[in-house]
Length: 338
View 1: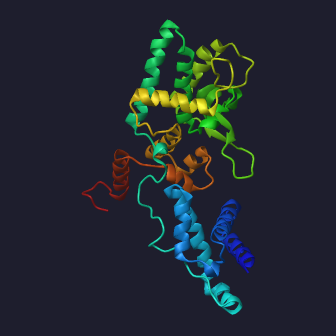
View 2: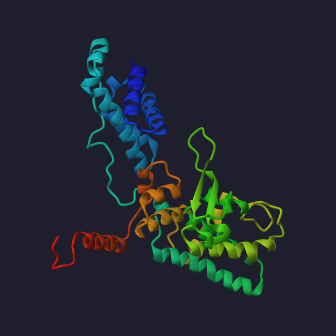
């Protein structure tokens, strides 16, 4: 009977035109809860939900997602239009009930629900981070002392991560050939688009590819300078990797973390911040600047707008600008008459 419930629920979600990955993920989640409790839906209790959540150690946003999927399944199972309540009572003498309620589910209680280490940087924090890296480059490059190549590489690397909204592995796996021209932006030359080959994969699927349009010309300028003036010093022209180590090998994702930690400390930023905060900053700053959210979603490679929304924290200055723009559209400027 449980399997029949899942088949019917899957059919119902398909009728709502929900995406197959979303439906599959929800079904897997319900099966996980069933395995955790060792009970059937008509036996589930609110206490089991609370025990399950307490056992997971998940992020706040993940808990909300899990509880939401479970609640949606039980809404279907308890809906009299589908007949499962009557069927269960007739066959097992018990009926499913909604066990996720306002008293035991996580609420949307903060502007940024993600982990603190991934929160977007303010514009001032971002500038301080880049200034810390650039200041070291200027001092080291003038003397050509040991470490100047790595310092210049780091400065360009983190500008590329922010400038194209990349994950650390996506950036580490970039090849020189992954940048190309864009017909829509000929002024950017061969840096008009970044072809990401190692995007975050769905479970059981190969890495997802995406093309990220260049929207920050200053980042393209920094990358162009690195390609022209710095990378040739590594003496590995035949190597495809964009970012090389002092030994002429591709940089690792772990090394990206280590280098970020160095410049984070030099900039005086909180120690819990991770390199992923640059990607969150990219999304938030584009939204603050008025870029279409759907375009930002495509740039970030998110399947759903709700994922992009969890990346976004809009600053007070940006909210004030948006408010003034909305008021300007609402009023005709003649005595404040709508």
